[in-house]
Structure formats: C-alpha cells, structure tokens
Image 1 (tube, rainbow, N blue to C red):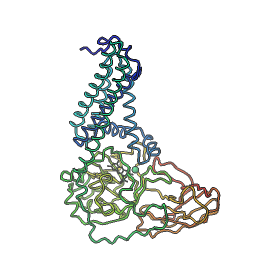
Image 2 (image 1 turned 90 degrees about the horizontal axis):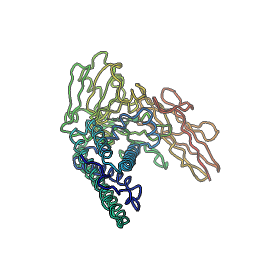
Image 3 (image 1 turned 180 degrees about the vertical axis):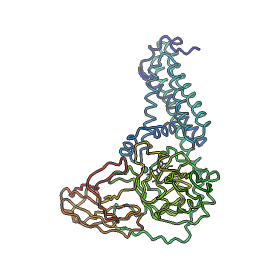
Image 4 (image 1 turned 120 degrees about the horizontal axis):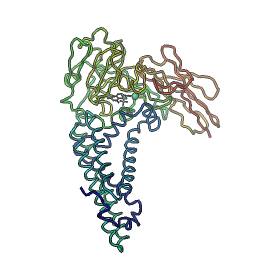
Length: 520
Ligand SMILES: Nc1nc2c(c(=O)[nH]1)N[C@H]1C(S)=C(S)[C@@H](COP(=O)(O)O)O[C@H]1N2
Ligand SMILES: [Mo]
C-alpha cells in the first residue's frame, strides 16, 4: 500500500512556509481530530447514544485513581464533568497536532493514531451498559474515517501546490481557509449533535409524563427564615439541588422496560415494574442528602421532600434471610452502593423514592426511582436509576467507591454551614445565617462566634423532621474592620462538632465552617 506522502510531493517543505507555516501539519492534525469529534457528536445525537468523548470521559471517571475524583470535585465542584469533557477535547486536539507534525511525510502514524483512538474510544464507550455495542463502533468508524479523509485532503492539497513555486502564498492561505472550514464543519456538527441529543432524549423520556401524587400527606409545611438574604432555602428546588454521580450521560430509562428486582439472600426473589410500584402505599418525607466529598462549608448537600415506598415494605415481601447483613443496590449504569441491611429496617426513613419536591424524579436525580436513606452519605445509599436490590453478606461484596479508597460504612457527620453575610458588608446589623444538618439524628443547637467574642446560640427554624436540616440565624452588629465568623452545631445525641479539620476522604469532612468578612 502506498501511504508515503513524501513520494507524491518531494517539495513538501518548500510550500510549508506562510500562513499555515511550519505548524501547518499540526493545524491539519488538530482540525482533523476536531472533525472526528464533531462527527462523533453529530452521530451520537442522531442515534441518542453517548459520543466517543463521553465514552472516554465515562471510562476516565471509572478508572481514575482514587484521589483524582476528590481533586476534581474540590477544584471544579459540580462542574467536574464539563471540565473533564473540555480536558479530553483539549488533549485530543493537542495529540492531533502532534501526530500531524510527526506525520508530515507519512500517513501511517495518522492512520495508526486515529485508528487506535477509534478502537479505544469505542471500547470505552461500549463498556457503558447504557450505550449499546453497535452504536459506539459505528460512530467510531465513521468519525475516524472522516477525520482521516480530512487530514489527507488538507495535506495533499498543500503538497500539490508546493510543486508550483509561485503559488506558495496563495496555497498556504487556501490551506488555512480549508483548515478553517473543516474546523467550522466540526463545530457545526458538534453543535447540531448536541441539539439533536437533548431533543432526542427529552422526547424519549417519559419523566415529564409521570405525575407523582402523595394523596393525603401529613407532612409539615417548611418553616423558613424568608427574610434572610442569601440563605439556602429549607427545601432546595430540584433545579438547584446538587448533583453528583459517575454518569457522563444521564441514563435515560425506558419505563416500559424498567423493573427493580430483589435478589440474593431472600426467600421470594421478585421484580416490580413502574406501574406496580406506583400502586403501592407511599409516604412523603423531608430528608437531607449529603455527598461525602462535601468540604466543610461546601454545597454538595441539599434537603428535599421525597415521595416513595418504604424500603422495609419491599424487603418484607422479599423475605430477607438471616445473615443477609448487607443491602447492595445497583443502577442501570452499573453503579453500586452497599449499606447495612439494618439501616433499611431499623425505623429510619429509608425510601425507594419516585418523587422529589412534588414532581417525578428529575432525570439527573434518578428517574424513575432511587434510594434515599436518612443518615447515610449518598455514595453508600442513594442509588439513582436503580435496577436491582441484592441482599448479601457484609464481607462478600464491596460497592463502587469502596475499592477506590472510601469507607465501607459512612454515616453522615453532623455539620453546619454559614451562607451569609457576604464577604464585604457595610457596618451595622446583619444576619449571620446558614444551615445545619445531622440526618436521622436532628440538630438541637447551633452556635456562632464572631472574632473571639464567645459562642452565642443562634435561632433555629422548627425542624421538619430529624432527617432534615434546619436553618439558623443570629443578628449581629458589625463594626468596621475584618471579622472572623465560625459556626458549630450540636446534634440530638448531645455531640458538638469539633474544631479539628478533617478532609472528606475517606468518610466525610469535619471541622467548623469559618469565614472572614470585611466591614467598611
Ligand atoms: N446510579 C448512581 N447513583 C448514585 C451515584 C452514582 O454515581 N450513580 N452517586 C451517589 C452519590 S456519590 C451521591 S452524593 C448522590 C447524589 O445524589 P443527587 O445527585 O441526587 O444529589 O447520588 C448517589 N447515587
Ligand atoms: Mo457523593
């Protein structure tokens, strides 16, 4: 096979001078990669499957060494996914540029690099159970082929012209234009792909058609300090609720094909579909959910009104066998949690939830059903897009985050956070206010200290339940200067938060949230 470009164009380097210049091949490589990426987005959007970039991102998330996730969440918060996608695109374009430079004389490296990327990306993407297998390969083959064709086209035109000594400047301008148009095509493909993707998924999702009706609910109306500016609402609206999961593409569950199975150490294994589930008696409860990665003062915590079936009812029907001391819950995308079976039956709020704040679960929060277990961090309890509940022994299985260095057992630690005042305020009276939580236990006291003025008790909202956070506030007269404010909560067991700072890994952050404000 003739793949040597040099033989077609011995004077390649002569033309390689102006606008596209010495780095022309790098530009061509990068632009060809961009086209591959763009076509991959377009095809993914058209068939509603994850694109290659998303597949690679998924793979990075699942195989990233422990510590990287902590770093990513600490650095990017809930923007960690966009950051990862941007990172992958950037690395891809840089590699494309490098391969272009190396390949200025030969096509083999480009074919090998593009081919290897296609194979790896398709393999990674196809390993996501939600992606299917043919889609990723089809997308990889078409997008890699078009990328290669683009590279060939860009480089060949340059070289042909290079044999005409007088046409160098014209040609290099033309190559630059060609590269620009390929880049534009890549952007348009990606944009159209993203639009197709969201409309495709929105149309195919039955989430908006599901209404969840609690019937008669005895749940209290949330009392809150509405007049305090900058304070997090007692019940966080769905759109504002933090989101943490390993899914690059939010799983879209087809209700007709969905069921939840109860398996393992049970007397009567069974499955339940969505219609059957919706017929069961439900309760509505306020439960505060927290991510173990939440730093002291962090935003990865929220309180919502969940509607669902008590897990105990579902387990009673299955008949949990003696010795089944671990409940493992698996999602449609193969995420797992594991927690002591006792937590599902000891009387705490432990729900198979279908509703969040009066609506069907949003897609990002687990439609059609998820677990909510009061007092346990999300990574050991709150399986979204749930598909299976398996009863097993504590020692026979470690769920997703455990081999990645996080504790196997992870009760939520008592915490408090300062939401307001802002970092710069004018002298005078200002509320110091925030939230405090200890799900399944409850908060009894929140104290605030300004500078070294001693701890003062804050006013608390009427707790919605022992599972929900409370708001707290304290009016303070601020004089000019810089002031340190810190907060600590006491829970219903009598435990008061300690000052010592502990990082999130491996089982949750500790310490007093401390801020400083400048008054001028
Ligand atoms: N299927 C699935 N469920 C999951 C996760 C996940 O990665 N996949 N992450 C868990 C973690 S770490 C947390 S903190 C909570 C967050 O729930 P939220 O996104 O609704 O706030 O979901 C849990 N449930
Ligand atoms: Mo989490």
